Image (cartoon, rainbow, N blue to C red; front, side):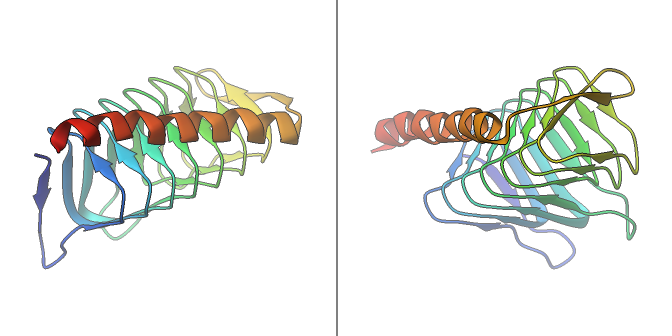
Length: 174
């Protein structure tokens, strides 16, 4: 069973039909929407500031989300996929974005709607990733625009797949 812990008077709020892996850790000022999945060894540490996650979003295995005390928050929109072993520290990720495995998003970065951050990229503080674009590298830089419909289709497919995967685990709990 996931570790859900209150701290500083804040208790995590988990939306309906949201899957929490057995060893996921959800702490403090965290609000997760409905139809989400928070995977194995993921840590959502809302101890020093807030973390808000929209509907249909998946945070994959080994990812860590944290903020700066009184300086940054995390906002993640709807139908976002956060790949394995991603670190998000005080950034905003808009609807339908895809964050590649082993990426790092630093404080006050904004990932635009439908954008893709390539695997292993580092998005520096205050970087604005354009909607519907691909950013890659260390530090992450603009690579190209993507067809908005194609991006939306791919990113939503991944988000929907993770909702399906989470249903497999719910079946085993009954």
